Image 1: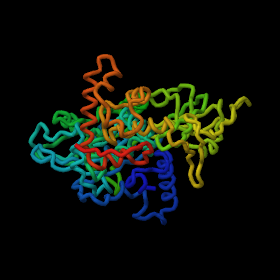
Image 2: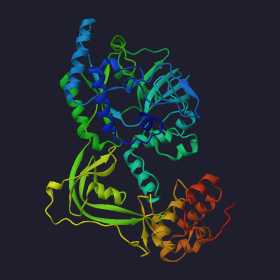
Image 3: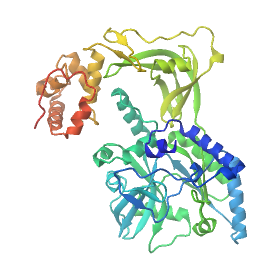
Image 4: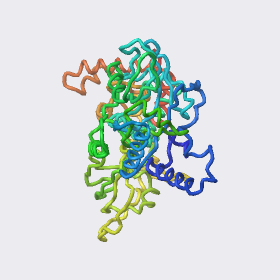
Length: 509
């Protein structure tokens, strides 16, 4: 389970389910301490170093955080911390509450103000050297505003909008969707080919000084202000608190405003501000004793399943799509979501007209998690997958051992369209300007009928698609010609599972 999350970036359960299982394990170990050992998941930080990366030993360990799931647990942490402060002659303890960004932790090393190395957290002690990949992130400065030696820690992430765009494109191309933004960011940063990383919309927020030479700070908040002056992209949500009441209000405020944030979060972190007191509190093998992470419960909403329609992808897979009464969940209005396949519909016992519970997986991907059967009126309608393709009318079949139902039509217009869109997409041949709308117009005007026809388009053909379209046409012709010089891996990606390469063409410069 830990390997699926940290090593493969492909979790099989939601973050909330994972957290609850960890709480259960932690409680069992408290009740039966004789069975706890150093190899327990409660004692481990992160995952393993991926084969192909150089190992980096962190001079200052990149620890995890102790998760809590109630305000009462936060209060207990503050009370115990304040008691420890009094024992050490410290009258007042202040705190900083920050967003817990949902991404992948990384350490950045600077020598004389220049970025020299970056590494993932790994197991907390040893991480992966991902310097080249980190250099593709525009918000990481190559040089900072002070010629000092400093190591900082940050969280690499993908914004909500960018993540939605990535998954929309992957769905169109019938590629496996990312489970959540965290796994998309982690998988992107841990690519062995930095060219792939460069194509992913990664960002980073810095939230800690791991080590610094020649400077001393009294407080964490002071550190963050200094990092900001150096030119780092610092976590924008940081609230200075003096009391338990202020901490609770900060957590509540972040919870209320999380929908408005451009990046995903999976909690709020409460940290002791006094750095010298942090040293007194110390760490466990896995977590610091001077901080806790409050985890928000996932947001759910009820809505109506108005209809189920079917879409045809580029490989002919017919995918059922739920049409919903629009409802706002975790900051965005949801009006439709994929139902994956026939088995999913049967498993959930979905009927058209049902009241359903919607949740955003990872706070981004909408999904139906429950049917409110007690709200059925008897007017609900059973749904059956089509026996023929809804676009071309060809026979639709489900082969033994497969969950998908496929269109068998060789010249299905939907398959052709999706293939062409995939071929021109950024992850494939990256033909700038050749989007869905232009492809559909070219098909409607019978200017193309397969992939090869893209490379025979003339300037006047494209210009006819738009009023005063000569400039657009020239730009698109240039983009098409530029694609002929792409690396081979792009062509392989573009042609994977393609069914509309109906005549040979030699793509050369």
